[in-house]
Image 1 (cartoon, rainbow, N blue to C red):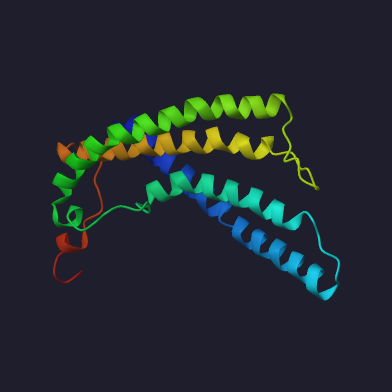
Image 2 (cartoon, one colour):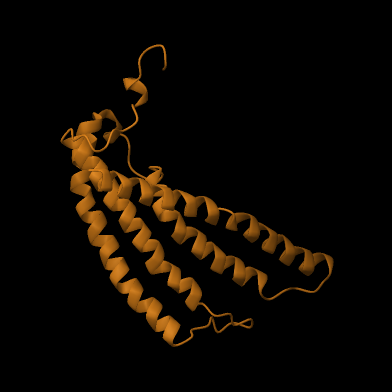
Length: 183
């Protein structure tokens, strides 16, 4: 059980670290856009590369956020009925929906590896005026998907532990479960 807990902790820490690190891309994107606007309107010398580089960085940012969001329960869900259930009932529901999660993410990973390899081997570029290579960005798709799958495995193991009252995972108490003096 110690190895299982170490795996779960390690994957979650890795996704947390990468999510926090890649969040700094927002500041870089902001600076690129401000630079592009400044050059266009203040210096009347538009830069052809700032908008496209911002789009490429945003793609990486969006991809690398998946595992981080899953580790922090940040993905969008319809909560009207779900939140009314007990933690254990929600875990059973999550076990059922994890089938769909793994079908989608494993298919995405399978096709992403092929797409990234094809892009890399062809040294794919954007075919724009600036024409940067886009194969490095496409390489993030299978990497981010793999991190999402690993975090999905952690979530599945957590849901199994909650649903069946197993001891290898002890979740944080929910606000309604806290004693009166700590709520």
